[in-house]
Image (cartoon, rainbow, N blue to C red; front, side, top):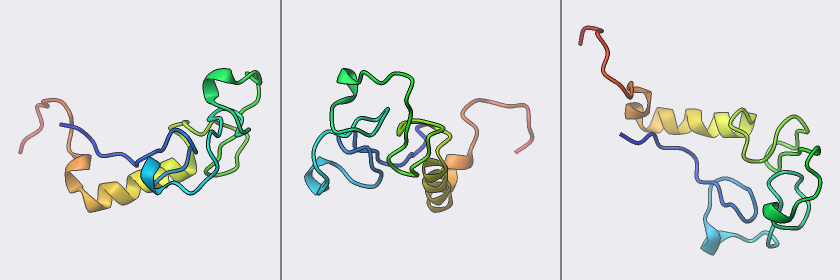
Length: 92
C-alpha cells in the first residue's frame, strides 16, 4: 500500500498545492531557495528550507519540521498510514 504524504510542488517548494493553484513566483531552488531551478544550483554547500526557513536541511528534506507536521496531520486523517508495510508475526 502507499502511504499518503504531503503534496509538495517542485517549482515553488511549498506544501499543500499543485501547479494550477500556485501563486508564488516561478522556480525556487529546493537546495538554496534562490530564484533558479534546482538543477542549475551552484551553491552545493548551502542548504536552506523554503518551508521552515532552516539552514539545517533542504526544502525536500524528510526531517523538516513542516514536512513531519504535515505527515502527522495526514496520519490522523488516514489511520491506514500507521499500518505496517510488511508481514509481521504479531498477533492480529
